[in-house]
Length: 261
Ligand code: MN
Image: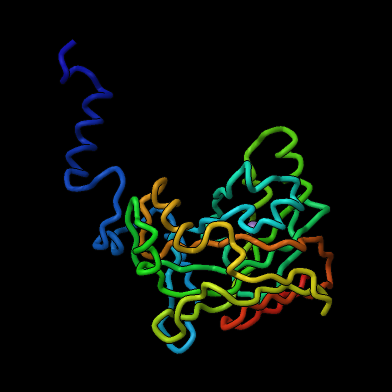
């Protein structure tokens, strides 16, 4: 059968002609003015201390078991198993002032106070000695976790996504730019529940420092401006219920107060 006799091929060619300058996937800035069949997703951005300009988020990487004492409390041995990465969707990141609605699908909601690192540039195979040059700023955040779903996933050797990547699972505070506040490589990190301190550690107890974390991650992904990294939680994790008030603070990066609603 000749091509012109094949109706499906004719339709395909007609469609190609109409879209001759388009690509299957477009990330061209000029396409921002394109007509979309649905409204484009929102840009998710973080407040920056000292300016009205905001930091737009591209991806959210998270480090697991990056403090020795927390690895032990999680039943792991950091000398055998190094820290690791997982991901949250960018719209999981929300303003801490909104509070944290107790999520659906769980009976065991866990808090993890963490430092957030925001990148202004990136690359692949970044040398640890150069890694901090890519950091825009630092902030305070929470990696909220549906612990019962995580334990089920662990038992069944399934991915952690449903326990970690749920809606609004990362309340954060504003970013403190390196330019004005320097790098956060050491300093107290703490979490309280209803004014009782539950986590009390120091950033310099991270197994993978920020430099090492960026470098290691860049061997697996091409990092770019807009990527943020949640750098893991110290020991003292626990559960919260509706009405509890979480506070997370990091020396030099302020503190956030998040009510479970
Ligand atoms: Mn975490």
